[in-house]
Image (cartoon, rainbow, N blue to C red; front, side, top):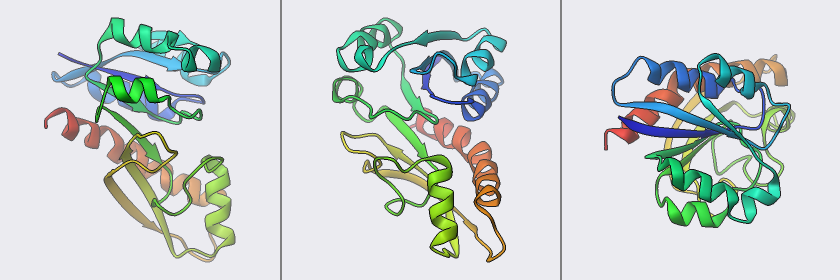
Length: 187
């Protein structure tokens, strides 16, 4: 059985979806959720499925303590699902081509530091984009610049608000993120 570790900073809907998806598969399980936010909704979501929780500080992430905890687990994949801190090079180097992220836009557009969640959706609407989507990509040392694994588009209408765009993106994330992870596990 392969092991997946999920990193999340917020409510955890994508993390929960991945946990549920792989609970029904015989190829892998989510064995731990790591979060930098002691008040994150993802903590209760993981507890609901008896998935181990690791809460850490930014210092723990950057000084190697988080890497030590990951090395004890020895995951096959590390999945960033709404994780807002820059992922450290020491973990990326220790798990080359085994760390993926989901981004709620069609990279390279709307990527980089500070571009997450509603910030992106508002920018999409303000710039009158005709389409947006999700990008699943490998994580490298720069925000949102790793090689693209998968993209899926959705139309944006003139009537769409940032909240409407967020809803459309959420549907794509829920459908495709677990499926793409499954494909990576099978490679």
